[in-house]
Image (cartoon, rainbow, N blue to C red):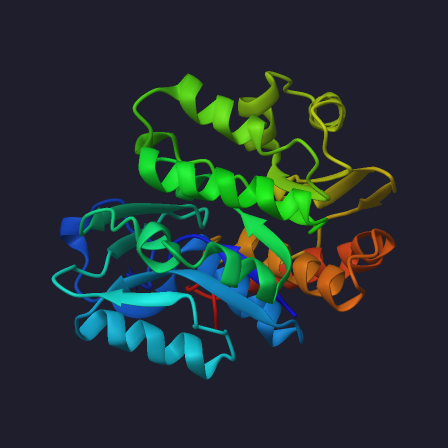
Length: 298
């Protein structure tokens, strides 16, 4: 049985030196990207079985991306290369503090909708748990499919991990992003969010208060990442892990790395909640190491 991870896969084109302006870049290095795809790869590297639900275009970049995901051991039975569709490219610049900025090219492919239409029951039969993010909730038709799948997963007793990965520029209204992100908190085994995402979802700037609000919203456990400050776990278990020193190049994929480690440990334990607490220190360490490279995945 595998984790079913629903979300985007794309190609990151990264300028491997700090810059403020895309026009000043003289070279870009391609790397697999997309938050959900990154989490899937990290979890697979840590021994979990992960099915990636989504896709890319049936073009040179899409085939390049599929080959690399397959090489990492990600199960691609629900990953489709769509004809007459361009694979999404993200040109990534990193500033002097390691914070990335992206310029996206290629249309939103509704990749999860295309990959899973008519196959929801098949996917759920193969799944031991579900990973969700909000990027699959932006398009109304894709959102309908994903929310229905989520309810079926809950009815079958499948655990759900929510990594909001909120990108407000993708939404027509800020309130819409907040509403659908919070709707997926209910009955989640784990919500893993940045402190900024938690504030956006709850209105609470204090991480402790934000975590409490997410627990009141129905999550069983909440992990909030605090950047250089480490991470906290609240809910059925409690843990505080300090930050780990790092020579930061880029924070691209650092949060995805942390989520991937937690997801793998939970899945390998049979979704035993204590596994999240036991894994948090290793997850923070892996996230810190991820900041020492340019791309999400080495």
